[in-house]
Image 1: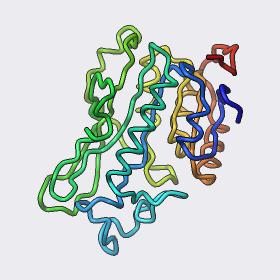
Image 2 (image 1 turned 90 degrees about the vertical axis):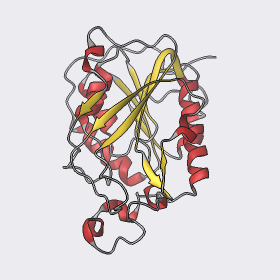
Image 3 (image 1 turned 180 degrees about the horizontal axis):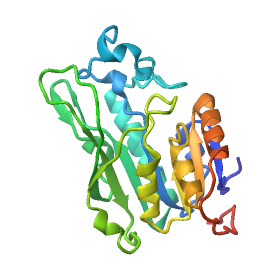
Length: 257
């Protein structure tokens, strides 16, 4: 891929940071993503000994395809922070990042992801309340929500009336999906349709949910995914998705600094 080329309506199969660094500044309207959570490094959720109970048949026990989800915590936080900084670089001045993550207890202490988002312009935290969950730790209650950080550039605004949704959203987790940790299309639809964004980037595309929602809404997508297996899964889902409205034409596939 050449420098200053944005691959519209494509998923680039590759490592997130090297690929992101080839994208031009100020070229996407919105970033919507949910990264790997580094769950296998956790001390508090039972995945270290998954030979019994509900984790026994959980796909995440084996990690993701091409990624085992088990980095040293400091390395993981630094990696995620760097990805977010690159996403800020490629965002237009009226853009925003919706960054879905999960709080967890590590060594008896709450990790609130401050070591990932610490110097970024977090404007709001949205609570995604989901049904179900697993908790093997008797030291705290079953977590039933995840957090979405709205990291916004100064000129970012929602479309009229979208602010009436409030900051607690309830969506059932995606069940009919072979990816080990998918999120629901309806959640991403809520985010994208609340903006006028025409080009939506997901640097951890997974099974293609962000692209599916973007296509349904007649928007353009750009994806990055390290796993060839998930890239193929995403492309198949996108091919089977019908657009509900006509996309606005984007005249520039290449951008200049």
